[in-house]
Length: 100
Image 1 (cartoon, rainbow, N blue to C red):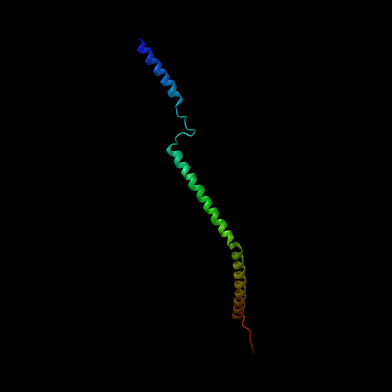
Image 2: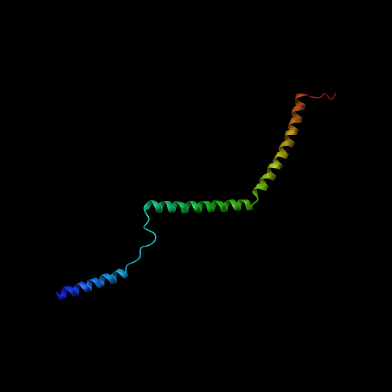
């Protein structure tokens, strides 16, 4: 009977001692496959948006808007000049003037 009592007390003490050595649960549970895939896709999306924003800022740094506007104005000026010349030539072909 004494052996049984001693074994019971030892097991109780070990159980109480082992209770204090429990590893606390992690705050974040194991993620499932879908959650991992979604988080990976979100990360890729965020990186893509950041990269595109960087490219846009770089392009703005080149002042392409101003260059495109100047190119458009120069082109319109040249085309309108040549259109005027063509209009005059066509008029003189259709309505020739007698120089006699």
